[in-house]
Length: 447
Image (cartoon, rainbow, N blue to C red; front, top):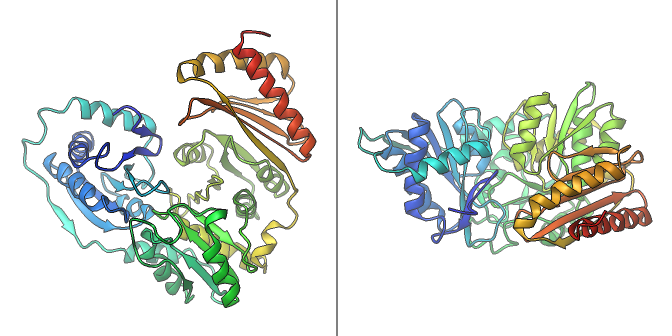
């Protein structure tokens, strides 16, 4: 089970690491900790129905009942988790087709915490006496219409907009077009057949995979295009000229506009561009930074009663509507904000400064990471004592002109990641150089 658990749930190679027997045991473990009714859904991956049924049977074996949603976006499973004992989504999100995993939700429809995943992991290892009571049952045919209507209810207007959609052969093939029709928009769509091999563009919507959506927007004269990841919790955007809108720019626009007319805060992670700070502070708001990962963003949002939050992967959270990132909901929120400002999609970039961001990896074994980060923090606090130092996830130093640098252990490689950003490319390179040297000196045991 080593390496399968993270803040985003259990994840690994389908049928080798994430197996039917693993999911069966997980269902029993979840039921022993949280008996009751659980929603279960899955994405389009070929292994997902088998794993989801195994998980459901494990829940039944542990005495819990199951609302079996079947093929659905992750935020839909979160929606049907509300008011129940919880929910489970079989998905590997934006990862390649050979992966799969399980993401869990609490009775609020929010991702469970890493500590709760670890409780389940311990219960899995203690398996033995479960499954001997009265089994639970499965209720099928829940459908997605209640979820679709709830998302559509978030729409302000947008009816005059011409919209392009790219579900990417993922779970939103079932919901995206339906939801837009419910708000009065007959969208133009591509990659609409659910397919676990993700033949259209792969499961992750990024600048390099949006060519088809860009062509659709240009050829049909559309106002905006939205692409969603494999399980539907992320969104990427194309403007009316078919140009991809940078994710940090879109996040800055949405966070700032969400604060319009009210004081408050938004939450982003420590690795987020300072363009969000410029936009949010200009709107009279405050930026709070969390650890990387949408569950950590949500945790900080709830703690600080933030208006909104998100990450630059396109996972945005609007707590007044949902505690789970939802790509289709996010696209509707963006349309609302464009309508309020009578704006075109290309104007999302207006008024935002140009910043230069650089990234570098420094080799570092997993055994070295923790002691090295401890020594490095002491060095940073000594050298940069007058700057804004944040250590919620790695070490982040912020400067008065909104330049910043982050040193953070990689979660997937034997490396430390150094990220620097500044209004000036020369300053970005200078800050990057300073911190790379500081890390390397610290590794060698020099001050």
